[in-house]
Amino acid sequence: MEILHTNSADGTRLRLARWGKPGRNLLIVPGLAEHAGRYVYMGEKLAAAGWQVTCVELRGHGESEGRRGHVRSWMKYVEDFQAAAAVAGGDLNPVVVVAHSMGGLVALDALRAPVHPPIRALALCNPLLRSKVQVPGWKRAASGLLSRFLPFLPIDNELDTAGLTRNTALVRAYEDDPLVFGTVTPRWFTEHHAAIERVLAYAPTYHMPLRMMVGTDDIVCDHKAGLDFAGRWGGPAEPVVYDGYYHELFNEPERDAVIGDMARWLDEQELS
Image 1 (spheres, one colour):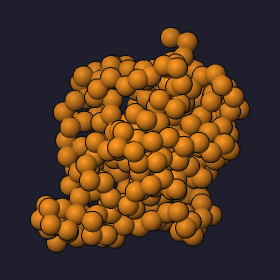
Image 2 (cartoon, one colour; image 1 turned 180 degrees about the horizontal axis):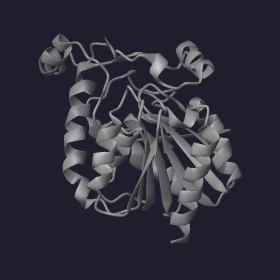
Image 3 (cartoon, rainbow, N blue to C red; image 1 turned 90 degrees about the vertical axis):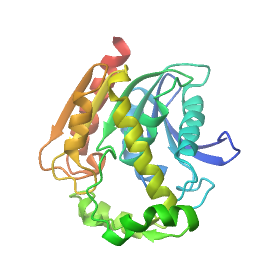
Image 4 (cartoon, helix red, strand yellow; image 1 turned 45 degrees about the horizontal axis):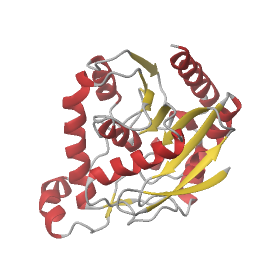
């Protein structure tokens, strides 16, 4: 794994990881609280399939700069995505994007506008289009006020880690990972809701090929929201339903098949 760095539009220093030799370009956008180290297995698999894989750690994630679980404006994540895409694509070479959970919401928000280099195709894994995490009523009720007056306040994200994957060893690794965090801020909460509203409204206007991968037993993100979104997608869309799978499809016991099927789909987009 090669470590790279770049700066977002406001100067925030971002850490990226890379696998594979120069050639076809793929950008991975992880979910909330994740970092590139959680994508080593997939990065190596996709590199072996002929891709040069770049994984971005969004601001506040991994070893990138920024406050953990916080963003002043969701557009800052969009700027991070744009900076990472430029690294992944080099001299305006097309890029395919693989994004998980919150990373999917960031990618979708970014792709409402042209990205340079151009994005050829998008593969989403249980994207954050509607949360299934049980947030206490008081947090929801107070989120707007707290976002305005205490935007940096760290609050438990209420994530049940047992629902991430059926691979219990990887659940334990997540829980013991010093780079993983378990909080979000009120500003993050209100900003992510606004981003969801934007991308849902924009669904018919997207045009690149989409692979929507969802697990029916995901307790973090609502898989039905992902399927509904794919049904309204403006370009070619391929929904893929994994019956009984949890949130992290790329970490499930059957992950070789999940990654292999996605790699074949990505190959098809390169040839089309």
